Image (cartoon, rainbow, N blue to C red):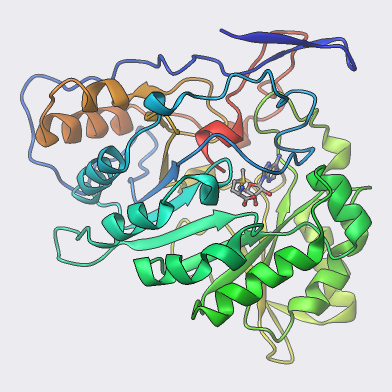
Amino acid sequence: MVEKVISATSKVIPIRIDEGKGLTPSIGGELLAPHDRTQDTRGRTLRDLRISVTDRCNFRCTYCMPKEVFDQHYPYLAHQELLSFEEITRLTTIFSTLGVEKIRLTGGEPLLRKNLEVLIEMLAAVRTPAGKPLDLTLTTNGSILRKKAAALKVAGLQRLTVSLDGLDDAIFKEMNDVDFPVADVLDGINAAQEAGFENIKVNMVVKKGTNDHEIVAMAKHFKGSGIILRFIEFMDVGSSNGWNMAEVLPSKEVIARIHEVFPLEAIEANYTGEVAQRWRYADGSGEIGVISSVTQTFCHECTRARISTDGQMYLCLFANEGFDFKTLLRSGKSDLEIANAIMNTWSVRDDHYSEIRGSHTANPSTGNRKVEMSYIGG
Ligand code: SAM
C-alpha cells in the first residue's frame, strides 16, 4: 500500500489501496456457457459497465482529485499497467455476452487517453449476442471537447455527459482548482452539439456552502436547451476529499429550490436501475435529474460493474478491493474462462455501501480506506 503524509492537514491519506494487485477471480471448475441471468447475492443482474481509461486528469476538483494529494509525486499508473485498447475491447465483448448493453468510458479524464477515438471505433463494432450495438457513452470535464467532439462522433460515440459545477467563473475555478474557465466548457458542449450529439447531459456536483447557490442559475441556463442537467449529491468516494455530511445538500432540497422558480413534476425512470430520478418542467421545456446516492440510496437496483484503468473489476464505487482481470487477460485464458470468472465474481457480490454508509465512510485516522474515483472511474 502506498501512503503519503499531507502536511496541510497532518493526516495520513492512503492513495491507491492495492496497487493493482487485486483479488484473484475464480474461474471455477466446470465452465458454463455465458448467459445474461447471473444474479448476485441480492438478486441484482449485471447490465452495465463503466471503464476507466486513464487515472490522470487535467482538473484538480477539490472533491475528487485534490491538489494536495494528486501532486507531481502521485504514483499514477505506468503505461504498461493500463489495459490496452485490444484488452478493453476483448473484455467488453465478453461482458456483452453476459447481458451488458451499456458502456460508459470515464476516468480520470477519458479524453486525455491518447487516440481514444480509436478505442471508441473498436467498441462501436462490438455486438451483443442478439446482434445489437452497445449503448456507448462517455463522461468528460469538457475541457478538450472542442478539439475532440467531431472525431468522437465519427468514431461511433452515441452519447456524452459533461461535468460542470456552476456558471460563476470564480466558483468553478475554485472547484476545478486549475483556473479553468466556464466559457471553455460551454464551448466544448457547443462543439459536441455542432458535431451532431443529440443526447447530452450535464452533471453538477453540489457542495453545500460552495456552489449550491448556482443551482437555479444552472437550471435556467440549460432549461429549454435539450440538454439534461443532473445534480449529484457530494459523495464520500475515495479517501482524500475530506467528505463531510454537512456539505451534502439533499436532492429534495435541490428540487425544492428549482421548483420554487420553475415548477417541476416527477416522471418515471427510463429503466430499472437508472441512477437519476427524473423531473420535468411543468411548462414542457425539458427535464432535469437528481442523483441522490447519499440521501436516497439505490444499491438495491445497482446493475453496474466497473473496470479500473489497470483492469481490476470493482463491484461498487465505494469498494476497497478489486478483482484482477488484467492478469487473467494477460495469462492466456480463453474468453469462456474469463466469462466464467466474471459470472463467479458477480454472483458473490454482496455490497450495498450507500445503505450502510456512516460506519464505512473512509476515515484516515481509523485506517478505514476506499479506492479513489479517478482510478476506479466515476
Ligand atoms: N473527468 C471526467 C469528468 O469530469 O466528468 C470523468 C471522471 S469524473 C470522476 C466523473 C464524475 O464524477 C464527474 O461528474 C464528477 O463531478 C463526479 N464526482 C467526482 N467526485 C465526486 C464526489 N465526491 N461526489 C459526487 N460526484 C463526484
